[in-house]
Length: 308
Ligand code: CP
Ligand code: NVA
Image (cartoon, rainbow, N blue to C red; front, side, top):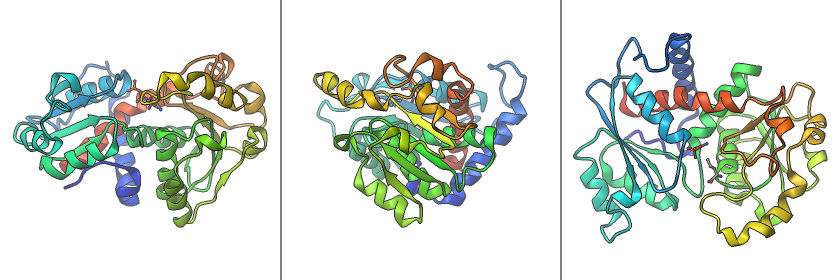
């Protein structure tokens, strides 16, 4: 069953094929009104359930719009509307959903829930973010980098801040797409050792550097994310802000990267915290291209999952 659960669980050739499909589908729609259907409607007659146990703007709207562009139908559900977490097992929920819909996209907390859904649904399951990873985002991000700067292979990506779910998917991507990654942030917020080891085992140079200015030297791309993720307790807010303040992406930090370095953020951004307005709105920033490319990349992911 071709699930899309994590970048390191999908063959590099398949990931590359998805990006090629995304690029072609984006080009085919250029200049057309957002709501027009695609010329070919690969998802005609198909139904996809989009399940959110956490809030979402981009993931929710881009999946919904993309499926409709491809002629499919969507059902957007919040975790609280379902019986998820109300006593029915995930396995039973998955078995039931698989009788109604052709694919499931799930945004949840524990990655184990996603895997259990995939094991029992009998239809493809797509990871729409867990506490541990966010693979759809990084597919869009790699697509965006390559649109602006050409092949990402061999480049140096710097992650500044919390070694969170998005950072983990960047590490998975380093192994699969063949680029190097430097993490800079406080030791208590290091990315998971397994993700670092995986990228290193794939032959990539993965560096942990506590000094943010030293870290961005030679960087082709600087990436950050919020200092508190949706699954983090608000009680950690003050401590995390104090720890992460030195890792803010500002003009001084960007000036220490390569002159043509890009800036990315999966959004939502907390302007003035992990990134300044000057960087968000500056010439290096491609954050809204990333957001747009969620649409194109996920359409390609769905087609791959459904074999269409
Ligand atoms: N970047 C991202 O996944 O955004 P949402 O939380 O708004 O879906
Ligand atoms: N790290 C963030 C990403 C949001 C898209 C979170 O998990 O809240």
